[in-house]
Image 1: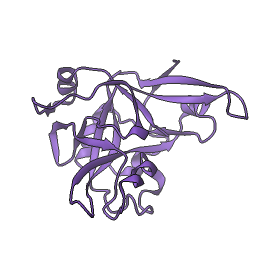
Image 2 (image 1 turned 90 degrees about the vertical axis):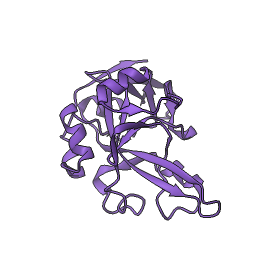
Image 3 (image 1 turned 45 degrees about the horizontal axis):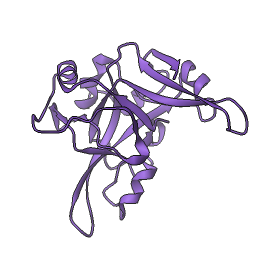
Length: 206
């Protein structure tokens, strides 16, 4: 699972790393810790515009048939193994995105009651990487307002994350750098990103 992420790098650094430009007038979303449950706007790159960093997408996907904006609290993450089965995702598998990040955060439960826990800051060896995601531009059924939304893909945890995320043993899909454009170009299938597809991770108590 992944509900908290970090993007602290300035816009020029992210633009150079991903060879994509953000509109000059846009407010660049930066935070030491984005909380997914506040549905923040986070910069991403879509398959429809791979040379642009979009800054108006909110975390928490709203599928085409969603009746209410509150549905997004259920779709911060999407399980890779069941994308083809879940109504929320099966019709938007062609709408792919990259979500640049510096790190994400997860908690290790230290007792069975869940009262004691340790937060970890986790990142790839290259500390500016991309999560794999899906997106949808949802139209409010009553007001007609367009709300741009996305979700992060998750997979079975690797050894590092199985130790930290000791209950559900999940982790977000972090792409190898050489696969980022392949993901956007639909040259790699979602199932190919399932564990043991793996990017080495560094994790530190935070």
